[in-house]
Image (cartoon, rainbow, N blue to C red; front, top):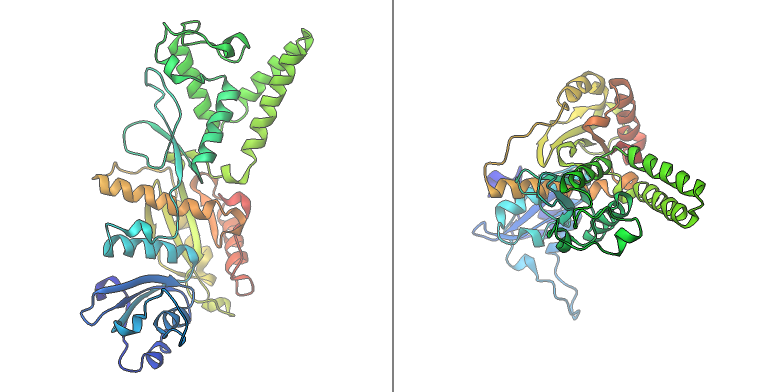
Length: 389
């Protein structure tokens, strides 16, 4: 057990005295029995307090469902962590090892969602999924909930006049056009009015819009709206205006800010790398490099040395190129790492630390200034600005 943790404490007979020797900062800890078997894996921002609370005897005559762990605890193992992100990552990594069958019940982040679309399929469609198998399809995300993913698809359907009945579309070119064709809201690939090849091009445009190319389609609809107004088709013009406005409102929502192609789900995440200090000299920053679900943890860097290491960080944030997973287990790990990262991205400016997508990194001087502002002694708890994702 010891090899999984950096520190170890035998509790002895006087547990309360032993616990007072634990550090008063964050970490992931394991309470073990006399045979060094796991009793409880958990985390906290103050190890001394949380472990002491876990091992304290319940108040007399008070009913509680919590087990009295001190009766079976013999030792505490722990790893120090200095940010909420590092704590969540470390807890997740240890839980996978120590409880591979049930670790998802104990980790502190829910699954994120992605949209799968195979543009080359005979009949492509957007499908919300919580995983992204390495099957050659495009994956777009992350989305916080299945509802958010569904709402994004509905927006795409309206904006690009996509088919609303995929069962009928599968019958192309022998399907029967629905009422949306009569309303001018569907090109009817189901009955062959337009070819499936043309429909696939439209799907490709919807994918491009989702991952950041936001101007072409609204511009086309604005031209159509102007033409409809000139032709006195005011109802059609009003419908087009509503579609454009709904799409514009959707892409401004905070929960959709992290949405990208899976190949662009690469972030430089900067977190505190040591205890909060009053002195700049003793403040540290730790980098985490996330590449499509793989994660590399860099060593802590003293704040005065930041300017000298940032060029090396930026050099490691080039175009994402990740080898295919060796196994289904490795692919599962990649999904779960992105779920964890997504939890913090969805918090936007409330997420402690700095989060930068590789393709949106500032230059060395601006990044150094942002790091000093976020992790300097007076602002050690600063949060990322909304545009860092």
